[in-house]
Each structure stands twice: as structure tokens, then as C-alpha cells.
Amino acid sequence: MEKLPPFESIAFAGREPGVRLIVTGAVHGNETCGTVGIRRVMEEIRSGAVEIVRGRVTFVPIANPKAYAKRERMGDRNLNRNLNPTATPKDFEDHVANWLCPLLASHEALLDLHSTRGKTEAFALVGPHDNGGAIEPFKHSAIERALAKRLGVKRFVEGWLDTYARGVARRRADAAANPLAADAIYGVGTTEYMRSQGGYAITLECGQHEDPASPEVAYRAIRNTLAFLGHTGEPAPAPVEQYEALRLHEVIDRDHAEDEFTRTWASFDPLAPGDVIARRHAGAEVRAPRQGRILFPDTGARPGHEWFYLAETIKAI
Image 1: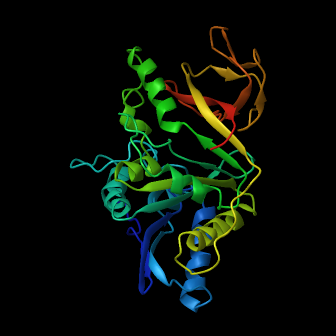
Image 2 (image 1 turned 90 degrees about the vertical axis):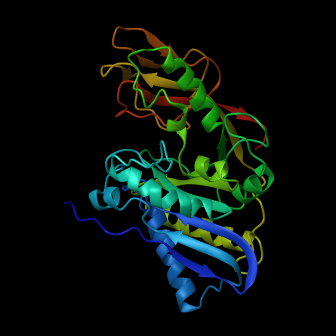
């Protein structure tokens, strides 16, 4: 049997009541900036340089130890998709979910630290505005977005799950589509699960995987979060005033292994109406429908899975 490290979480509690916060790193095993940032903050707490005076903060430096040991995005599958407990675990990530989901549910707030394959400025993904809808009902958008503006980044993206759901609706009409990718629950990751349990959550993309600045972004975001939510008693950081806000509006799938991008795209590259983004294996062009940006272009996407997203600028998060 394959030998893997045990799941690990470390909690610190103050003497006064306060927010129950959880901070996660290495949900994807090759995204280690969060692990570095978390360990740095934990050492400061242990040494007394940082004091937790109220609430509780739980750190998960390595959420997916199998993927982390491999230094790859996944162990058996993408942990940040289809994240739900199951009575019949089939792969390693199912076992992670059975441990991690109850841990998330016991907290009120989540900061999930990631990084990107392509070089890009750090950005945060936030959830929906308050709503009672069927896709992602939510009631904590004010505090979630207030926290996002204190993380130290200047770019924010919303609209993940409803855009993903529209992609699911399209895939369901295609009998050849991947059955998991055609299930709306496959779009649920750490932050979506946290919101489904009554909490609020932010995914912070700290920069490119190997960028030496990315762990510093993660560290500063943790410290700012602890100050803003009152854990350390330090002055709360001021909100960012000048920023770019974007809303995802469409997901484009890769239909065939020979579908190709027309160039090497990076997240947040600008798009003008009619720009040719990609070509299908049979020659059809995939064009930008309107002004905006491309997000999460994935040259390694498998047929039947999301290939890239389109986003438009909005006035504010």
C-alpha cells in the first residue's frame, strides 16, 4: 500500500471569542506558496512575535499530501472539483474531502491560497452577491468582499459557479461529454463548499508557481486577514481603493485533443470583439464575443473539460 503522510491541521485560539478562520495551502500539490506563507505565520505565532488574542485560526499547510509529495497539481484527481464527503471513497481526493469538508464546516471563514501556471499579478476570486437562488445561495457577501479588499491585491474576479453551471447545462446536451464535468457539483471546490455550509471564503491566487514573490503575497494576505478579522488585535489594514473588477460570463470547453490556441495566452490578456482565441480541430475559429479578458487558459485541458474562461470588466466588486 502506498505510504502517505497523515492529514494535518494546526489550530491556535485566543482567550476572547472571535471568528473561526481556516487557512489552507497546497490544495493543488504544485502550488506551494500558501504552504510557505502558512508555516511562516505559524512560526511567528509560536515564537510570540504574533499573538492570537481572540477567535480561533486553523492552518492546513498541505491540504493534499499526495499531490504535494508528487509536486503535481493532482494526486488522483482535482481536489478543487467535486469537493464533498462521500460514503464510498474511490480515490485519494475523496479521502481528503472526507477529512477536509467537516473541518471547513466547523469554521466561519476560509482563506484558500493558490498560485497559477502562467505569470500573472495576484488576484482574488470572490463569491456571489447575497441571493436565495438555487446555484449558490449566500448571505455574507459584504464581509467576504470587505476582507478581499484587505488582502493586498488589486484585482478581483466573481461569477465562478454560475458560469460553470452554464457550461454544465451545455455539456449535458452532449452525450460524449465527460460525465463528471457535466455535473454541476463538479464545480464545487473549497470556497463553494464553505459557502454551502454557511460560511464565507476567498480564493487568493498569489502569483505564478515559481515566482519568489508569491509566498510573500500569501504571508501578507494571512497577516492582513488575522488583523482584519480581529484575531491579532492589530490595526485593520485599509481597503484597496483602486482595483480592477471582473465578472466571468462564459466557459469554453476543449472538444478535441487537437483543438489549439492561436497563441500563448495568459490570464487577464485583453480581448477585443472578434479576436481569434483558438481553432477547433476541424478548422472552426473561436472568437471573443465582446471586449474583455481571457482567464485560466489551460493548454493541458482534456476533451470535455473547461479550456478557458471569458470575463468582462465591472465597476466594483
